[in-house]
Image 1: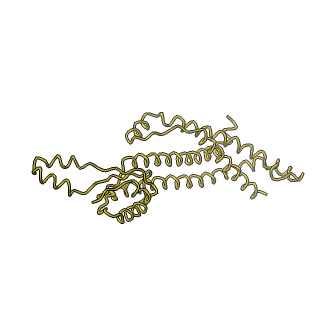
Image 2 (image 1 turned 180 degrees about the vertical axis):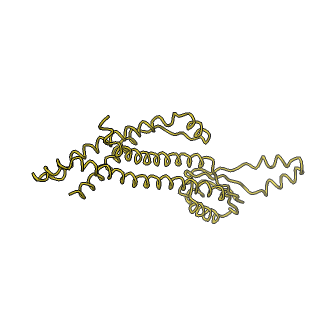
Image 3 (image 1 turned 90 degrees about the vertical axis):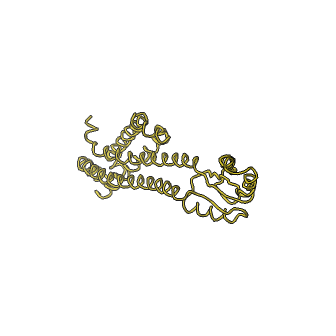
Length: 266
């Protein structure tokens, strides 16, 4: 308990930094899953006077997934009671063909315009519906969400480093006499700083454990489960890889802060 009490400020700062990092990872993965979900429901409608095939469209679009013809039977069936069979037959022959184009990833606004321009050059295609207004709104919202998560991470990391540096200066003051004696005997930088690095390692491991436990149980909280289920997204538990990433990040931040403060204290 005394060890935790003496290192509380450092641990708290590290927890804040690691939380922001893992939150950013979670936000990135969630946005990625949502993009996949949106892409499954998204398609480009092509109107053409000629038949289109995969061989014609695929070479034009790097993210091509599939193309299928949209049946016009439903529209014609609705009209069969209002017009004669002869006119219905004429309409069927003159009606353009409709196609649904699927992509394997949600396109950016710029890429969407490129796709549109390429398709309009294909012989027979006279109209393309990309639902640009809705698509752009969704795409920009997803990009903004990721940007906010990263800004939050960098802001918290900066403030956290300041708090960590303050705590390290307290450690230096507590071990001032020991450090000065070791300096008189010609001890190297790493040897003089060893006690601080040991404290930093302990804080890094403890902070990583706390954050890993938080994000392990987070997906099981009822109100969070209910919210994500409404938009058909699953929040996965923190993986071993993510925990190791957090530990490495914690050690890097801790060692960096200790090294900077000790360099200035020389």
